[in-house]
Image (cartoon, rainbow, N blue to C red; front, side):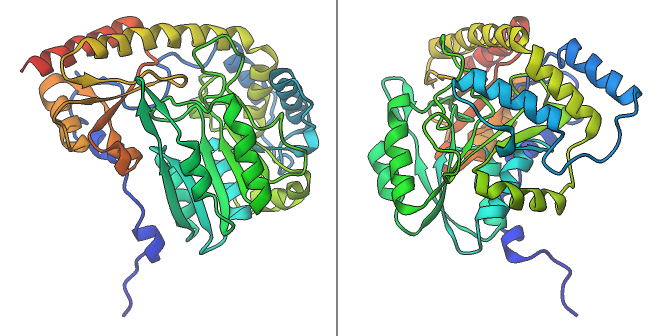
Length: 387
């Protein structure tokens, strides 16, 4: 009798190393947890109240596959303000989380055997989703220069060959904080146009940058409304809505109808009452985003600054996001040192190898916490390093 096992592509998926490390501390209450990518503050009250009102008003029904029209109108207005260029609501799709958007887009444009390029280190989902769909994956690793992460544009151009189906680009990047320079967009877009490559951007941290600009550089203002350019995004990070599972896609016009069908056969639609909370976030969320950005900038200076003062620690400067990606001299096994930090220092960090082989030996610290929490973690790490 045949074994009841998953198909080979699923069996080959990498287990979550973050979960492996977290499981090592389930019985302990004294761990300072910096491994999850979210703020330690709850969703702003005005979003919770709007959602509670919607729930109590009975907004519990199926909605349009692509999301309620009032939410897409609010999102269209928000994107127009942010990028200085209209984004019609007919190009928008609401999804049940940003990761759901990535999966839906991949299902729509990536076939088994397709060649897909991803810049790495990367959030594991970006790498594993194409593999679930039996695509062939090639990675282009970020590099370190002058205390920051950078992308070798020539290496990326070489990887974008005529047989490439899609490029997945995450900027600001999780885990490194690397952010694509605005001047690199045109070359990447032109190469994708030339070879018919789908350019799929994962943009959850686009508002969380360290500088005066309202957003990280986006391809949306450069691309036409029916090009092979897709932006996937989420309400999770900038609006502190991680547990809500609400995201969106900006699509080329010709893909929208097909995407509605793909959504139907995955989730049917996003939850009705949560869409009301998303409308409140888009219409009234700028003050809370500004507050979060200020908190993250201060936390970045606190944590990265302290890490750089510790002997044997390398901590490149992130340009966006909510993470410090650092390594300790002599460490070659990220999971082993992450578990040792739990056992000996009571600190929970994400192992860098969870983000691909390029992250082996590195650790990720989510610094979206109160200053006193980050300070306590830094004290524990300093004591650990002193032995």
